[in-house]
Amino acid sequence: MTTPPPYGPYPGYYGYPGYPPPPRSTNAMAIVSLVCAFVFAPLGIIFGHISLSQIKRTGEQGRGMALAGLVIGYVVTVLAIIGLVITLVLLAVVARDVDRRSQYPYPTHSYTAAPRLDPSIENLPSFAPPAGLGANCTYPAAPPAAGKAVRGPRTGRVPTTPAVVAATISTDHGNIGVRLDNAKSPCTVNSFVSLAQQGYFDGTSCHRLTANNSLSVLQCGDPSGTGAGGPGYSFANEYPTNQYAKGDPALGVPVRYPRGTLAMANAGANTNGSQFFIVYADSKLPPTYTVFGTVDETGLATVDAVAAAGVVGGNLDGKPALPLTIDSIRLD
Image: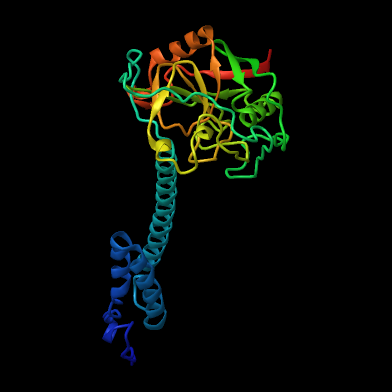
């Protein structure tokens, strides 16, 4: 006699197949993790870890979805952090550029023709040698760090003779002859000559051009080419600032800086460094920019060519559309 098969989940009763085990349910947290990974990545990571813990305990399905939620969540989170860091860096760069531009009172304009100032604008004051002129030139360290390796100028007493020192600024568009006014601004000339003799200006570009009805200058002397660089030291203003008493309200009243003036750029009183500018059309500035020389007509023709090309992008203030690079500055 044949013995009937036993009851059980696999072989069925009398040869009929048994009922299969019920399918395992999918873990709900795994689904939530995958969805959140695309909506809000950190939640996708949190729910992914919870889901894996539950699946391990209950044996539910959804491990693949939980792992996918974790991976996508981590990738999206890392990319978001990188994007945030890049955004903060760019904002810092923009803020620095805005701050730098605010330090220089140069309006923006594209060059069209030599502007004419209101004839009522006063000229630079007559020069009367102040007491102690050139007797104690100092160049204390000041930020930013030097754009090129350079030694500070000699300090203490510097000669005021000869009254004029001739020099040539050689550029890729021709020579610019200058006469340095050692009798009026000896500490400034001392610094300029020191930097020139060390090759500090060699290979640097004139980074800024301005031109409007009150200001027309070409600015040079920054190895970084950004307008924020310097030699790592600063020094005090000289002529015409030293023709006024300290705190004189007239120091805030603009005067005429005539065409051909060679003067120091600065970011406030006594912050002179290496940046200088050439005035190619009469300009209006407060008498707080040290004049230390003049440019000859041949040199002004070179500057005029740069000014005629205008500013990059047609702006009123910025990089010259026709770049000018200083090859060297040598005393004649």
